[in-house]
Structure formats: structure tokens, C-alpha cells
Image (tube, rainbow, N blue to C red):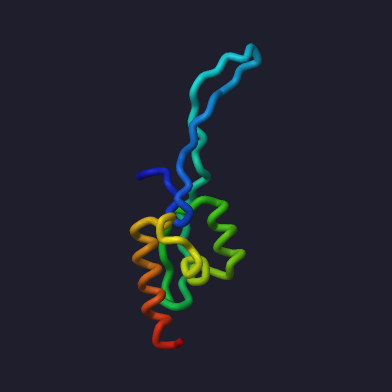
Length: 96
């Protein structure tokens, strides 16, 4: 399973461990990923995603998964998230 956030596209970063003697060795900074089930109001069901803690806060801030995906850029979303975004847009189309 890749270490990539499905909503924001956050990936591992590369940097250095720096010792007290200023020796530098390569290391990876991994994103804080969590397996969560987010509820979609339009679809009336839960969607399992692997997202970062920062993305979870963003979803809460924007008012839920449906609103987050409506504003999200397609380039950052995973294939599963894009599929859910299209399903939500299709479910909301008759209401508008």
C-alpha cells in the first residue's frame, strides 16, 4: 500500500538526519496517514479512504466529504476519490 494521501496527494519527503557532530544521513519524512470512513450525505453511505491527518481536518473545516470533493482539484485526488467525486456530483445533479 503506497504512502500517499488519497485526498491531498501528500507523499513522503526526503531530508537529512543531522547529528550533534553535524553528520548528515538521508531519511524519509512520512505523512501521517489514517484509514478512515467518511460519510457522504449525497450518497447516504460511508466511504473508506486513507488520508492524512491534515486532510481530515480540512474535510471537517469545509463541512464534510461532499463539499471538500466539490472544491478539490482533480489532479490531487486518487482514482478512488475521483470516482466518488463523480458519484456525488451525479447524485446532487437532480436536486439542483
